[in-house]
Amino acid sequence: MRILRRHETRAKTGLSDGTIDLREARGEFPRRVRLGERAVGWLESEIDEWIAARAAERAITPVRPKRRPNAGRDADFDDPIEDLYR
Image (tube, rainbow, N blue to C red; front, side):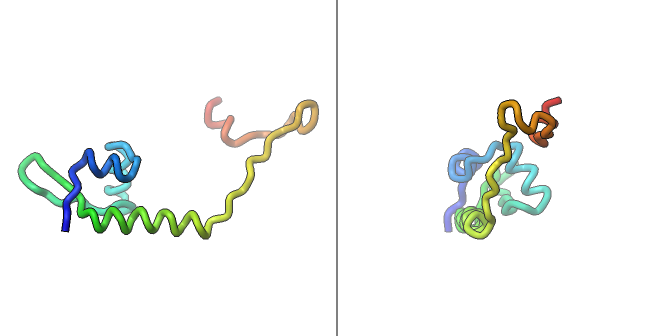
């Protein structure tokens, strides 16, 4: 059994510290293991399982192509992504 420190967990998952902390607090990421007063880590086996679960979700979740307005056509089309930046 191997314990990954934070920098290794970040590298393995591609997530930022804040995202790891948020998902862990929501119960969407493996819980950390206390190693000492100021040290934490994650069980590598749990991180590997979490990554495998994300890959499995990808395999069963269909990808919908983004609908984009054509030049001159569909000018009144509202893009929900663009609404986030307004």
